[in-house]
Image 1 (cartoon, rainbow, N blue to C red):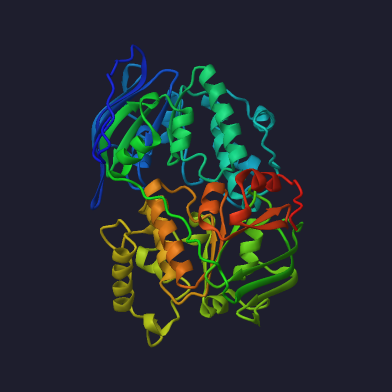
Image 2 (spheres, one colour):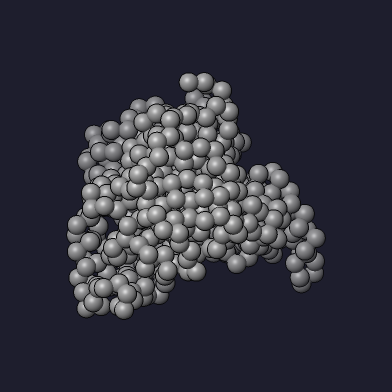
Length: 520
């Protein structure tokens, strides 16, 4: 097999006698964007078909055309050999197609059960409303998911939200299930449970389209893979015939560089000192318990832990949007425990939240408006009492170029961007100012290999310039590659802090599960 970046692995295509879905020359345009350019492929009955590509390659748009959310501009598709055309997702659901969307479609003020019932239509689903609660509770038990169905959605972690979306889709009987980045916010353990669920569904005759950026997942669970690049079809391959390197080349058209921290010893002054920190969660329960750690200049301190062990609350206390019950936060030698978020921004603290949709961006604002969120009162963006549109436009254009944000205009709504480009908007906003400390919670979550390479490079550049970084990630390999030390959090406590030179993934994994270390 050729090692050239442009080489595409090939296999002899064998036409399936029973494709469940056939797509022919599907094209979808948006203003200034050709999202899908004459895409053709098929999904065979009983297979898991991967749909792979960089952020913005057109995967989600293609899936939403199949599900009836968008109307294709041209092309057609068949379901079980019959030509179909859907006016809306309800039509697709009735035809036997279900979809779990990349971005959550839950109402935060409603409970979990209320959200499940919201999408229920008794006249067509064949499931009595009185049984919906029992069916959903049963699914929680079958797949080992622990969620309070009476809790409000606003109180759930990102991982819990994803499971609600997945299990909502499993309530209904479908022939084809489309999963758009279902593991982007799941822990490894939750991902394993999901894949067990997929195996069960396959055994019951359901075909699956799995959209993901995670090449290991593709290799593990798919039968075939269709790769898109910039809206065009690159090819469809048998998974067993390719390697992760092959798929990576197909996605981005070049080799991906693996970036790691330098081996220099960190000996800078402390930029952040957290002492005896305690905090409650949204339900009034103690979530952080006597948390202590330090981040130095030019250091990346990795934070490892299974989702839901206090990472969210820790970052929110540090950035000032959640009140600590006890303890102190020392920044550059000054106690900032009681200061407001805007003050902390002015001190030189940047923040990349774990959920770009809910807390990182305003979807209905333009790229330019999102790029100055939190900075709109700075003199550079003002003209008297009003914002200076000329200054904002200039800054936005420069940021789009410098951070390689793929958009025809800075006036485009940020919700219209791919996940990777949305993340670049946040990174541009948070790092285009004078920084002393960056709080980065899951900065590569849901990103493709090219976007991960980009984010990683930015983090290392900041570290090398003397910025202290607190980096939380559920990808242990990422933490091992980038961090100088790793702090492990379990049930709201830092159970150990280990220099990366002395750490290994097995030890970190054991600590994440509650095992005690003898190193302290």
